[in-house]
Image (cartoon, rainbow, N blue to C red; front, side, top):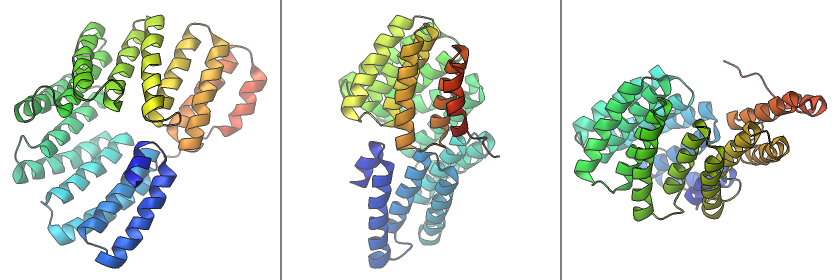
Length: 320
């Protein structure tokens, strides 16, 4: 139940159930039992999704210490926790630290499970994402290519893990400005996801959303809105109106309305995204703050000084 709430973006409900589970497992099994540590990891994952990165690190560290103590440094559960810690550092923008921890996980996975095991390939994929975030696009493609070859070999061309890597490679091409190539690879992922998972699966909808981003970058705003609309309809149906993926699409649509000069509509959609982010993440989360800045900027550009000033107190200055 906690996992379902977490996937829906209902993080407080998920944490409440995980806390209940954790108390029961600690009492029945002990602090360092694998099942107890699994719950600790799950709570850390929720904090990571909420953007509470320091709290996520603390809970992953607790799990990691338990796994090392009971299972050793090279056990797959230990290594998965190392991988998850790296993902928190990646989300924080600590790219070098993330790569250091991913490398630690990768060496362990290759030793314990082999170079083509899904856990190994997932870490390879994660390292590629860091290179992509750093703007090292050729290196990102090299590592995504390594992951893709492994997935094709072990799971086949139509497996969701393979298709996610195809989607990720498309995103690198998008970031390089190779829009047509990006669309080609997104289309390849989309066809596979629709066949394997269905038209309203979150992975399918993520690719639909990504294609909309490319159309937006090309200045094809009507086409972008059409594809964003398709993604939004699916997200609302599958995940709910306040899920982070739904709200991201709402925010992106607001940005297009702004670019088109449809300022009243942009205000409406930014407001919708802002309300959802505040409800789901709270006022201080980066997603909430980014949407707030977008709305303030729009008000300032359109001469709505009073509205902009009324929102300013809700901004914060991020601390190092």
